[in-house]
Image (cartoon, rainbow, N blue to C red):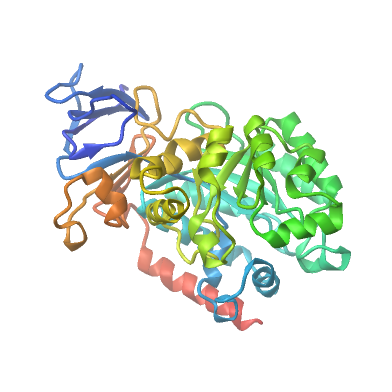
Length: 452
């Protein structure tokens, strides 16, 4: 049976590679973009469906390169509202240690549903909490991804350095190294898909230098090399982290990263704020990726990521919403807007443009995840698309539709397509009862706090 051909005709605006004319729209065939049509053009072959996109701005599906789904259960929790990173973590670890399989499933659905509605088609989650009874956490997340029809690179996180050993997490939240390595191998063998169009992928992701041992960092790097999967961790988020590395390892964060075998293009780091110029040059030479998380960095007062210097040095830069307990939202369009304004404070209005931050949320994040088949609208790329209607009071009087998505604060996509299939139509996720999900999720959020 021939794949269905869909013509998204004459969009209001479309984000395409430089010098491409797509004013006539694009043709999707099966799971791929088949044609980009110039103004006044027609598809090369007949189409089964013609969708009138004259009220829509078409973007590549956005890609969220760093998140913690489970944290949707602890949004805006009063005891941590005004805390910086380390006290924030120590206060929340005992709460998160009470996570159950049912609560994680609901938290994952909420995080991904919010992302999907914001135009996000590919997600990466960093899950590192495996208290007793939650050994199958990544399996639970994979089920939620499949239910929503998204793409995901789920990272098998880990912590094996408890506070009684000089680490940050309490002992009952950590696992031993053998358990971590065995489960990592199981997940990659069972779920990891390779090649263009992959829907589920697995990465390996020790939480941070202050929650895993040096030996585990080294062993996971070796395991990732053998299995040929991505590596991820937090690094350079706060000055406290730098001081921790100096006190416990006798070296700064990037020196430690190199010593444990993590200075490679297989790696992407969350945050990447507190690096000096020499360290930025070393990261760039190794093509280590950096996921900028502006809202979390502002919420915890961690600092401003040196995105331009990192890109100039050779680091791919992408965008992530980070955990919903340090962002309190999972909206990637909102994140792009915050990235624009925060980075303009550092580099100026002429350097940080709407086009640049959309690039971070698409092609940049795709590079962090090791993907070349998503994040761009071009023939042969995956048909992952986000369509926005810049209408209503917020957009009244705007003149440049593509710029208006960022500058006027678009919050929700009207339609979202993943692999050629609509997952959001008329602003609603197909097949998901959101009021019921909210009711169950709120009950789980109250329960996890009530146990403290």
